[in-house]
Length: 168
Image 1: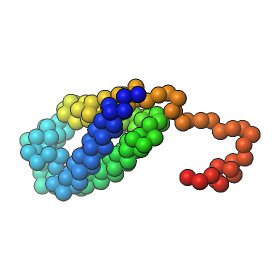
Image 2: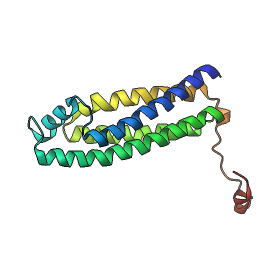
Image 3: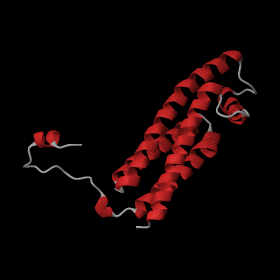
């Protein structure tokens, strides 16, 4: 295994997670996805069939961004912590878990965006995000030896209480 490349991709994922977590906080504080209003203009055009938010819709949008920003921040803190675990253990299960989470978000968000007529969201947000996070996950998976996969079925004859007695 190329340890330098492995370490690079782990640091890439952790750094991207920190940036995305900070981005979530910025949504909460700004009440917008970006400081230039580019995303807002696309959103208003696609969803509200208008040119600008009304005062009421802007307030509702800010409320939704507080919830979304908090969720985004929590997700990426967790993502970064799980990615960081790869550094010390070099097993596949964290990579598979992160990949499953990223894939489920991507599929559901893309479908919802397309159904609502917000294809711009797929192009401006989803595709870049899945490239920034998905490509490193594929690289890490390929750099990890399959023998390090610690998914193991429990031994049928073992006493389940033994698992509770083992130190963490």
